[in-house]
Length: 137
Image: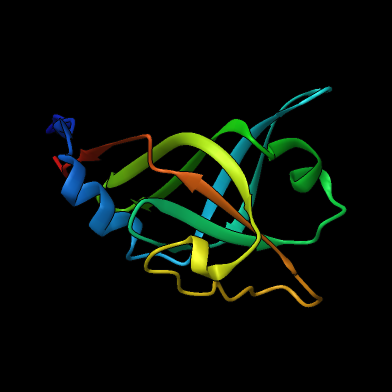
């Protein structure tokens, strides 16, 4: 009877430029923010501008009610269950409502996958961008 040894993958920090490239490679991420009931995390479609993450939502939902000019986080990842590897990027910064696309250098309108009008655009400044990659064993 043979026994196999399971090797664990190595975890390494990503440099800020690689974090931005990975952030820019996806269309769906999760926005995290505080509510009176406690922390909340919701998926949104997004794009990356030069200095912020942009997403659209409805003006009368839980995100709109709780993020304006407040600290928020935004997370994007990719996980491979088979190889038990992947990466994760975390953005932290102030979330603000965007009145005009002219206010955001490099603006690309985020397209949403969900039906309905998403007329409120929100930007989260890239105040802190960190990431980690788990390499396969």
